[in-house]
Amino acid sequence: MAMKQSLDMRQGQSLVMTPQLQQAIKLLQLSNQELAEFVEAEIERNPLLQKAEDNSDGGAGEGNEPSRREEMSLDDRSGMGEAREQLDAPGEDVYEPGTGSDNAMPAGASGPSAKADWSGIGAGAASDDYDVASNASSDVTLNQHLHAQLQLAGLSAADSLIAARLIDETDESGYLRTTIEEVATALGADEANVEAVLQVCQGFEPTGVMARSIPECLALQLKERGRYDPAMEAMIENLALVAKHDLKALSDRCGVGKEDLMDMMAELRQLSPKPGAGFSSDTTIAVAPDVYVRELPNGMFAVELNSDTLPRVLMDKAYYAEVSALPMRDKEKEFISECAASASWLIKSLDQRARTILKVASEIVRQQDAFFAHGVAHLRPLNLKQVADAIEMHESTVSRVTTNKYMSTPRGLFELKYFFSAAIPATGGGEAHSAEAVRYRIKQLIEKEDPEDVLSDDQIVEILTGYGVEIARRTVAKYRESLNIPSSVQRRRINRAS
Image (cartoon, rainbow, N blue to C red; front, side, top):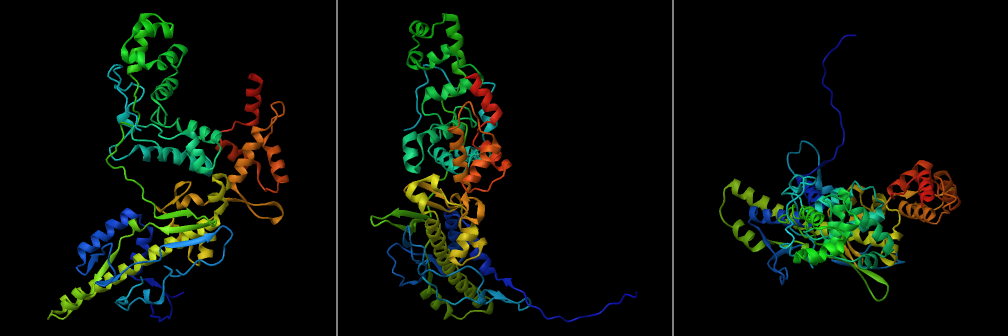
């Protein structure tokens, strides 16, 4: 077959996002701190932009002032309020290839710390078994280090929420500065469950982290070395005598001779009373919530934007009019026009971003009303598509909104992504079950099982099927392992040994 060259003309349609729309999408996924830095850079670059004062009434130019509050009842699943603007591409933000220019935007826009005196003990030198410097970086904080380990801990979503709260309550020295009761009350969880999650977190590096006291911190390090015997336990319980260097009283309490006592004290000096000391504190950034959720006396929830994190900017129209009236060369006129279009678009983009965050947060509160009313055990299965369909936006938009955005609630501070969990199908086509609810039910079944009749994974599948949960045996095994529950064979051996 002969080959030849030819020219063909074809007519087709394609959509290309303008740079302005790309900027709006970029703004949507920025955290509040990153957004503030971006706006500061734009103000430095654009002479027509200026910060809006707190008492500004908008007289100096156009500004961004979105609606900052939505209220909803737990049973109200109707409309989403007045904010209907979307970041899906409108007509003016799309141009055909080859036009050579973008559509200019119109000028209008809507709008107790762990400080202990160790001088008497002589602690401070790290042991050969644990090198703080090799496990820390000047650019990594203890909070980040613990959160990274949490991602690999294999905890359920509900337990991960508890663990995240415990990590956030850990100070720079590595000590937990809250009580089990306070965390359980805030999250609506069982104290035993919070205690169990804490035990898992105390296994994170560095050893001794998230202890509630110096004795517990030292005990964790000794246990990790296999040196927490009765004599050492007695020494830990009498640290005041160690600080006083009262060897006679300490020898009597520990039941050992003077030589053994000196060896024990030397070993104690190798422990670290501040396990988090090797991590950076200079780069620690306090997380500011983007959204506040408050329960009102009438049973409704108020969802408000945090106005402190919203950068407010104005376009100086008076200066623009003054400069435009001056005689200028073509390049100067083009520069001023670009600055005006860029300022108008930034103001509109900031307004759209705020409205979109408010819409997504409001829908999350509606979908997860049981969590806000009853606690972490009542999370419902939720995915991005459900929220996107409810607020008539694209999934990618919701995904960007829920990244690095935080919600302050009566139960604590949560990233918006925490409220999304997988669904387990129901038998007979019924309503799906939350993966967290299924994990919780598996945990309850095993906790209540007869020690003489341990439940196998297959038996658990049969029981859950009776509850209307369609689940495979391997899924039960995966959930059981994520809960750190041994297999039925291991549990039988443990029961026989005990």
